[in-house]
Length: 156
Image (cartoon, rainbow, N blue to C red):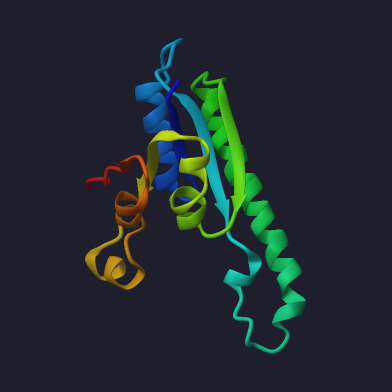
């Protein structure tokens, strides 16, 4: 059976993409894909400027916070799956930069994924120019089809 990976992080965009995907592909009793939900936990060192004095002492605290965030993210994804009655799903937390974890060498290739689903952060032009578009990166580097789910903007 083909594998679909849904990448999740703590963002609303990510969780919206998961819900959208479950509603469209996993609402039947015989879904067309085996579902894997993957979260990439950043290493503590990437969140701290190591050149600063005392940085080594705070790494364990940063790592603890990142572990808590990862656990909350996976728990929220599990809750969404339960609410949609999706039971045949595998959850994993991989350690490293999300770009590497998901598409350069790990999850997509390891699970022979047919589709990688990601949520669009909805950055504006300036923020995207400075930070780079993660979805653009995946669309160019993943070894499978990439589906980018965009959360609709609320109209006032």
